[in-house]
Length: 186
Image (tube, rainbow, N blue to C red; front, side, top):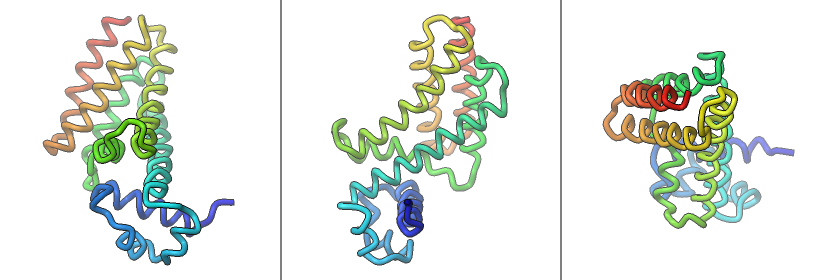
């Protein structure tokens, strides 16, 4: 049975990691912000890396659920959903608390691809890819796997550019490029 204290600690850590990064966010700061004792941390996690993995898993589930729900609400047809992904991104980019992608940050801070934090971040990106691929296949587009890879690259690039330059328009630019790719695969 999930523990409310554990969930609160994970949610607090996830928000702090997203805002401040992983190495820059100390355990004592997380515990103070969450209002929990160090014993709570060690009752649920062996290390800070284990807490980071749990935070990324929780954020990954939230992000993929949000992206699916939002794109599905914006478009009925699978090919249109591929473009609606970028409309959803633009909405996210325009939020005051947009801090870029916590998964990109994790992969950068924990570079070795076999590190548990890196592999957890990569798993979230695979889940986004799977959603894109599902829509590309449902739309019966040519070479759906290749198309999904290209759209994922546009998705990731839009997030990076929007964060680095404070430019929500990156979503619209990526959507235009995706439209060309989708038209060619139609």
